[in-house]
Amino acid sequence: MGLGFSDLRQRDAREVRDAIRCGSYTRHTAGLAEGKLQANLVILREDEALDFMRFCQRNPKPCPLVGVTDTGDPYFRTLGQDIDVRRDIPSYNIYRDGQMTEQRTDIAEFWQDDMVAFALGCSFTFENALEREGIPVWHIQNDTTVPMFLSNIPLVSAGPFGGEMVVSMRAIAKDRVEDAIRISAQFPHAHGAPVHVGDPVAIGISDAARPDWGDPAPVGEGEVPVFWACGVTPQAAVMRAKLPFVITHTPGHMLISDVPEDAETPVLLPD
Amino acid sequence: MGLGFSDLRQRDAREVRDAIRCGSYTRHTAGLAEGKLQANLVILREDEALDFMRFCQRNPKPCPLVGVTDTGDPYFRTLGQDIDVRRDIPSYNIYRDGQMTEQRTDIAEFWQDDMVAFALGCSFTFENALEREGIPVWHIQNDTTVPMFLSNIPLVSAGPFGGEMVVSMRAIAKDRVEDAIRISAQFPHAHGAPVHVGDPVAIGISDAARPDWGDPAPVGEGEVPVFWACGVTPQAAVMRAKLPFVITHTPGHMLISDVPEDAETPVLLPD
Image (tube, rainbow over all chains, first blue to last red; front, side, top):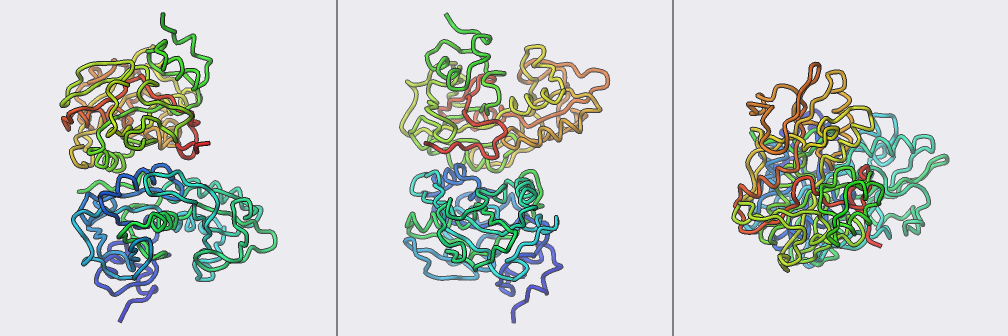
């Protein structure tokens, strides 16, 4: 018998991770452990890790690196206490040769001594800030997944990683666009300011009503589509690179850290 | 016959790098190519590069990574046009087994196919901003080098890299300390906000008049010593790790990029 969202709404980050670790919570993490940085997850072989870190350094808006493990060490030691990358994420995607082959709620059996795990900041951080400042986010209010699109914005390549940026779209009232830019720019570890405001065609999106990932969301009268760099970008790059074996989180099912989401740096010193 | 500072004061970044490349300018770069991000340099073997990137990710205040080359490629392609790490820095330090053995103005003869170069943001960026907002910086006004100290602030280790943080000290008038914090916090790629304000003993500095690197600077009546994370930290970590062969810039003699120092991300897309 699993726990629901409402059971965990008031729990702190550690308590939520405990529920995830023991398998009693396997759903998405939006709105949980309020005020704590949540993160995308990518697990690779060490042979691919240097190029992946270069890829993140060169594309910091879609891939804001907030944590990296030692090779073979399954703990994110700078993101909080006892964060086990094998069990503390509600759902994982397993990719083989660029194809998603299965989803799991625990990857302990797949963890190897030559693996490196990466945590990358996610949009929950700035979405929380937008809502706090009175800018509604349609997909949150309607309990759907943010619409995401493969744009034509080129990424800077590193080794096998490259391609185009995945972006997420939020419709913002015309008179709040400047505020949305200012607010999100305050979170460089969570994609920062938008990468495009206005006409979707300008960044290679032919039909904004048909996202490549997630659910459609309307752009209402008096609203402007605003596009942010998206944390699905590294998953798309990993698929494009056709690596033999990669593990990621399942979109929306994030790693919950102990780092405050407004921290200057995403690093908690170990005790 | 070399060029002096005044000959280059009004030149843009590319022109300054050209003068450095052809060997006609070999002095420090403070105040040159105003408005452009300058950077510390570390060159390592690829075998050591993944741990060094982890070290930078875990210690972003002393080691704000702003660029990394492909293995064997001597160009920082995301920091500007035609930036050659072998020739475009005015002076290099060569370390063997943890000891500085020589200084050079060109390292083309040492560059190897398994080398990786790293650029890390530097304090010139926030010092320029402090002076623009009317907060004088004593060592700039007196043409000396900022005082630097080995603190007792622990770094987060990665592989062979660890130890304690090197900090730089600037005396700030009591009524401008809050401004200095706010201003420098705007530049996360240039060490960000101070790591300590006030009593030097609290961070393991027994005599603030005797810096470990650089020149002494007074703390006047009505002033407070303010300490920032310092880009000499990675050089100290590299020495401590006793790597067989490492090249860095000579302190003060920085890489001048084409990236605006207030850019949201330190990345210029290649043409």
